[in-house]
Each structure stands twice: as C-alpha cells, then as structure tokens.
Image 1 (cartoon, chains in turn yellow, green, orange, red):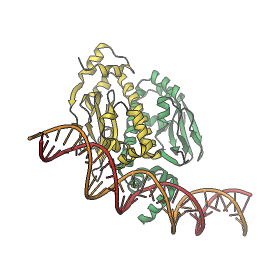
Image 2 (tube, chains in turn brown, purple, green, yellow):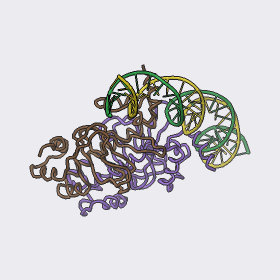
Image 3 (spheres, protein in one colour):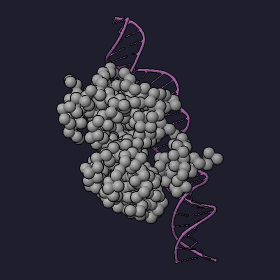
Image 4 (cartoon, helix red, strand yellow):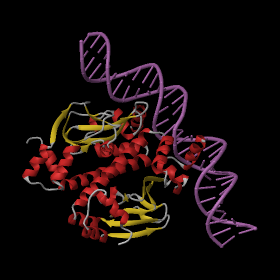
Length: 192
Length: 192
DNA sequence: TCTTTCACTTGACCTACATCAAGTGAAAGG
DNA sequence: CCTTTCACTTGATGTAGGTCAAGTGAAAGA
C-alpha cells in the first residue's frame, strides 16, 4: 500500500472514500517506473490506459510528415496523461508519450476504470472535474497559439512550468511553444 | 414540456432517466432564442452558464490585441457550449459566444447544474463523457494547428462542418482555421 | 432607382518564422 | 586524454502568411 498516497490525496480533494474503497481503487492501479526517454505509449496503438504521474515529467507529442516533433502537452506530478483522442474514440493514436525525467506513474486501464466507475460511481465526479480542468487548459492553449506571437507563448510557458523548465532542453521548449530550435535560440538571444 | 426532446435524447444516449427525473432536469433549464449575431455571452463577465444548442449554430471567439477575431470553437445542434476556462476557474472570460445563425438553446446555470448533480449524481457520468469528448476534439485541434498548413486545416474544416459551412462567411472560416481573410481568399483561388 | 454597405478580391510589400548547413563548446564515453 | 556526441548557435536564404489599401460586385435600404 505504499506509493498510493499522492493519488489518494488527489482523489480526496474531490470525493471522499471509505477504507475499503481506497483499497479497491488501488487494487486497480499498477505502479510503473520509466527512465528518461522511455515511452509510456507509442503512436499506432489504440491508447487504452490512463497514467497518473506520481513523480517526474512526461511529454505528449506527435511527429508530423517531416518528422518534426510537436509537443501537445507536458504533464508533471499530480496530473493524468493519456491520448484522449484515441482513448475516447477508440482510434489508433498519433501521439507518443515519453518520459522527460525519470518518472513513476500509476497506470489505470480503460477496463479497470470502467470497473471502478461501475462499483464506485462517485468516481464519475472525480473524472468529470479533472477532465473539465484539462479541457479548460486545452482551450487556453488554443487561444494562445492562435492569438499570441512565439515570444509571448514562451512567457506563458515560463509562468506555467517554471518549476520544471530546467528538465527541458531548448529544443523541447521550442517544440512546445511551436517554433523551431533555431528560431527559438535567436528569440532568446534577442531577449538578452 | 415542448422543446426538450433533443436534450433528453442526448442525455439518454448515456444515462437513463425516470419520468420524474426528466421533469426535474427540464425544470432547471431555460429556453432562449437568439437571432443571428446576438451574443450568448460576452468577454469580461465570468461565464456561469452552459448552453445546449437545440438548433442553429454559434461561434466561440476571442479578440486579440489588434482586434482580430480568432474562433476557438464552432458549436452546432446537439452540442454544449460555454467558456470552460472561465466556468471552471471562475475567472473573467476572454471569449464571446455569438449566434452565427438564428439559434435556440437551453441554458443551464452553474448553480442549477450543481443542484442537478447533487440530486441525480448519474449526471456526473453524462457530463464526464461529454467533457472527455470535447477535450479529445480540443486536443485534435491543437495538433492540427501545430502540424498542418492552412490548406490542410481548411480540408479538415470542410470534413467536419460541411453541413453548416454555408452559414459561415469566408472571413469566419479564415478566422477558424487561423489565417487572415485576404490570405484565405488567395488560398481558395489557388485551389481552383 | 440610387446609394450605401458588405463580403470578397487583388496588388504591392512586409515579417515572423522555417530551412539548411556550417560552426562552437561542453560533456560523456572509451 | 582523445574523440564522439549532442545541445546550441549563427549565417544565408526561403516562404507562408500578414498588412494595407484600393478595387469589384451584389445585395439591402431608402
């Protein structure tokens, strides 16, 4: 029963659980560890898992026609990651999920989540709240991309992710804000 | 009790309701009609409502520093719209929601939704499923913007919204795919 | 009917950012 | 200690898409 504290605390921010419920919930989770650059999920497969990050940091990205990497999401401790596009619509994934730092996760399979929701429907509320937040963040990211120049998007990145900015190479930050490494380098130079 | 059929059908795709529950649910909704170009919501206020569209079409957009319009979302019959960023985090909205066609909606206030969820917790499931879908669509939109050129984004727009493409001026389509009207006009010319 | 409006087009020019390729410098590995 | 690697830089040049401003043409108002 060790290693489940972070997720239980997270859940209990939104719903309360009896001891038996906690035990049942944890029984559905699998602990996994990934070293830096290990894949949690690869393009091509249908994504049938959700990952709760207990420590570390992962990126969710796609490779375009020219093999350029575009980071969709950065997820850190206390967040869930998955390819929702694939998970929700049962379509092959176009995304990779990769550890940026050494990372430990709790894996919840789609089937186990269904079992959880069937047995403890209060978890519907938990996931509803979390998904609404993720959706709100996602919408904000769209407005940023549509309406802000690269330099301003970088400012926002720093605000949001300053705690872990150090784990990211310039190349990765460039990919997250949506510019090439070369351009990003010049952008930084211009700021100084 | 007329006018509620579409929303009840939508809900019953995901959860089943007794007659009393239906009556209670509908009692929390307000029917509203908007003419073309009417605002469902304006920038500045905290968004405290969700709108279910029974007919018509709306756009969800922001104005940037230079007053350029950027359409975040297009919503048609059988979809919910709101500014989730504002709704979820209780922050002033940066978005407008505006009718593109004459539109009828059912309005559910945040408080009424809480009352609904408290009384009929099965609605947590309904909103969880809908939000997951909306999130998946939103993620797809980000990957499209990051990885596809404007012409390909237009193709996707046509696939997705061909039924209502006629309601949109070129300017609005340009704004949705993220280019200027002038550039969009040239893009269309190049295709012919 | 005349005129105003409004969506769209088009030309000339501009800029943010991409591409490619050749560096540099520091760290990692043998 | 040497060398390979890898992140980053930098120069030269290319391009997608932006800006501004002057059209056109059709529809809506009066």
